[in-house]
Amino acid sequence: MHGFPEYDRFAPRRPALVLTPDRRGCFHRFFDTSPFSPGGRYVALLQAPFEDRVNRPGEAATVLVVDLETGEEHEAGTTRGWEFQMGANLQWGTDDETLLYNDVDTAGWTAHGVRLSWRTGEARSFPRGIYHASPDGRFAAVTNPLAMRRTQNGYGVLVPDELVPRNRGLSEEDGLFVTDVDTGEIDLVAPIRKLVFDGVPREERGDYEAMENYAFHCKWNPPGDRLMVTIRRKPAGHREPFAVRNHGEMWFDVFTCRPDGSDVHRAVPWSEWKKGGHHTTFFPDGGHLSMNVNLHGRGMVLMQVNYDGTDYRPITEKVPGSGHPTFHRDTRHILTDTYVNELPALRPPGVPDDHNPIRWIDTDAGTEEQLLWIPTATPYQKDESVLRVDPHPAWSRDYRMAMVNTFIDGTRHPVVLVMDR
Image (tube, rainbow, N blue to C red):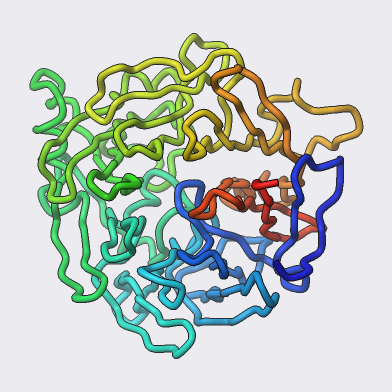
């Protein structure tokens, strides 16, 4: 790798390299997608034009590619389809030349996806946008990026408030979409109504019918043969028409299905999330899901469940759950972060309160290392929580590297952890 500056504060247990040292406001997407290109040479980042306020509809951010071998930074394009948590849902396509991300046509305030050959600038749009790319980069799974802020800010795209869709009851026009990014062919594979009617017991369905229901996270499993999608619901006419600050006033369900929308299961019911839970993602094998759940009311437990909702149980209770847990391909080790002050007992003397640990958990032994401590708290998140910096640890495809977001020296810098020592 090119000679990027090394992050050496508080004795990191792995080499940690700071990307974009001369830029401000750069970050990668999320803990369930690789910011590293399929060949491992490049990383894809978004650069926000500012960090001290929430962006407004129509304001543009920069799509950035960093060459890990030479250190070169390429401004590949701009996008108006972004927010501060997931950026523009920027991901790699089929190869090291192809990027996929969201944009917004400000003439009609419609969202669409972009398939960009970043070296040549050749771009093609596809309908609705992207939330998660299939493992081979050929298909985009997406819910409704315009409507996501009806439940939480930071994850979709921004349009004027009056143009944000509002769902009442169980929509047959909204839900989980899959798009062929080459042809632009799009299918609504699992409408919200289908997910609920196929996955929820009959006696519960009336509760959903009486509420506002929104499809939110959607993810491919690593083999590419199953999708996860979450449904969030809140009382119709909730006093907060947009982001609900108290998540206890919403109900969350996790569903899985085949890419064609068949074989629907409710993997995690709302009754478990009501205990307190977050950040579901697939195991490397694609047949299981991991998540944090406040199982006993005493803090987060790392949990697992089969895609069909069976075998719901702790992965380990010897160490606490936290943050955004993601398995190594050996399915023994978990890489995760924390929120600021989530696990204060882990903090060594001398490490400031605005720093988070990156945790390396051995689930067989029930032990952990804190690989490094990074600053993440921003001075702006007290007023606008969406302006926080979540580390979102994410693997390279060969699991030799991982990336985390930080707030080093008062701005967003991604840091690469070299994990294959």
